[in-house]
Length: 314
Ligand code: 8YV
Image (cartoon, rainbow, N blue to C red; front, top):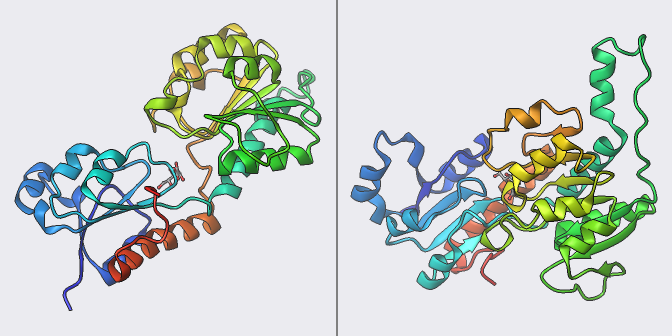
């Protein structure tokens, strides 16, 4: 039986690429000397697209794949996939939610603890040989803090559950209140920021959340406030964040995502009150294995039944 033909957009883990090649006829767009000419000549061959949250599936790429019937994305973020075009064309879209909730929430708490207690800054202090000469600055207590959560989806709720263990007071803002949760809904982000000691950003990326955390929100968070972002760089006005951090407008930030990854502004790198991570929230062996397995399972399910296992369109 002829194996389904997949186009791979962007890099995937070697184990996943091997698993895909074992079951499908895979062509990697990145291997083509002239991707646009390749798509013009061969785009009509592909019924499936294997991609990832960072690589996505743009309207232009989808237009070059007239026979496409399924997209399987490694990741939970859908902001780089043109879901409207996929839905309009009846293209199934599979992705990998749930399996990464724990690791992303764990890293949000790690960033919160680090930036509030100054752990990374203290490590640099010791490595510079400063300890014999001075005491490290006082930090801020985390237990019992007021925690504001922007986006109470699956990951936001996992963050709230962890924060409960630190006896934190928790409020959230969201497109709409979430039924059945014990935490207080604050409709206005700026008011949530004004109340919170730390604001954790876990809202989905995309046009509807672009620069939600702007200069006004950061001013409301205030000089004793911390920002943590494990969502998408696009949700925060990065220029406003740099300004707030440089001028003491907020006390510090813990970041795993940025406006133009993998490029981090030198202004952020120069600051001692920022923890900078390279988009690693889901990057554990356990979670990435689960994500890779689900990326493959979505394709297997589609070609066996016509439906992906976990759909982004339902
Ligand atoms: C990784 C992510 O960037 O799942 C997402 O949306 O941002 C991260 O888990 C992605 O999974 C890499 O493929």
